[in-house]
Amino acid sequence: MDATPQAAELMLAVGGILSVLVVAQYLKNRALLRYKALLLLGFVSGIAMIASCLLSYFDWGTPTAVLVAVSGFALAFRPFRDVHFAALIAILVMIVVYVLLGGLSGGLLDFLSAGWPRAIAAFIAGAIVYGLLNFAESIVKIFGKLLNCWPLLLLLGVVCILEAASMFLGYGTIFDAIADLSA
Image 1: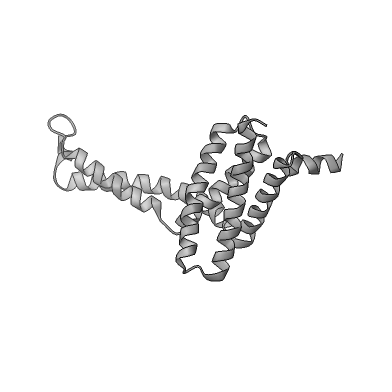
Image 2: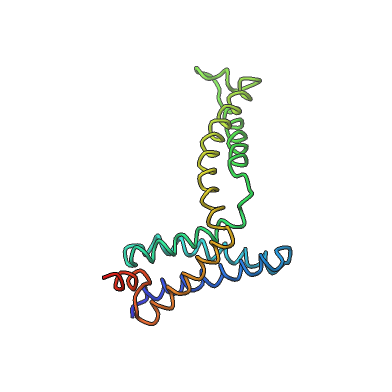
């Protein structure tokens, strides 16, 4: 076996085990430090799974790549389910625009370099960025909350573990087995 399929198996196994552990700890006591440590480990693993999937997508089968990407997204997104990124980024954009407008001197846009016009222009830039990011954030949150619903996260974890075991044992993916059964 070459290294690429083993990477897929490893990603699936780690993602599946972490998903099951996160659900178990969530149901047991989500206030404990153990749950928070699992969330951090899940975040790091989720990012690694997504990056691995992006780098090895063409070497893996489509079902395996999709499963790795979805589980990685679910694990990486879980700690940030309630963070409002659009507002944070919009405030950052407002500050940057306000600072940059202060550097304008001479020319047509000189009136934007001081006073109320500068503040209003920074606010408008922040509002535009907020509107666009809020829409994108809402779409991501819909999928993130759906995938992080504990029964679905548990099912996803179990499927990842079964997929990794099936691939490791040389039977191919679960989807290959389902296709063989229906043929």
